[in-house]
Length: 189
View 1 (tube, helix red, strand yellow):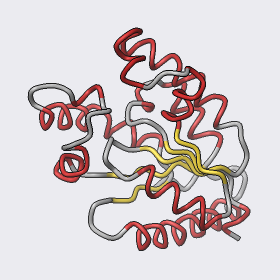
View 2 (spheres, one colour):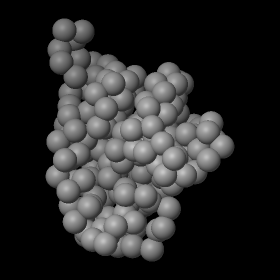
View 3 (cartoon, one colour):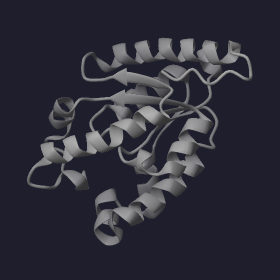
View 4 (cartoon, one colour):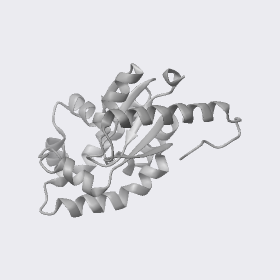
């Protein structure tokens, strides 16, 4: 039954494990995995840091919205979005309406541990990355929750175990939405 799921879209902060979980989940489902940041880079021919440097965050976000609109129209993919994708209302609508959105909720300590040595994240190249991550989490957590159909905490178990848990939740979610009357609201968790 999980094979009949619509596309699965992963949202959450940087360091939440969207790429790792997304690749494993796509393999389990026999689907294509796409990372929206990688997609923007492939379409642009430049990396995210360069886009931020030349076009600023606003320029990058415009490119990201075009990519998310295009990618969310693909059936049966697993998509990992950039951490800030939810800042745009249009992106939240594309994600929520076109697939099942899973919020990988990583506490700031987990994000710090996973991003400490990563020099490819423009927003963390500041004197106090912990404060940046905390501020981003505070601003974005309500938006992740708003768009999500399923919320999964991360940083407490191995990725393969987490994917197995997620597969169970996706099946439960799918069963609940296919059995719900047409007039019933979506079963958001």
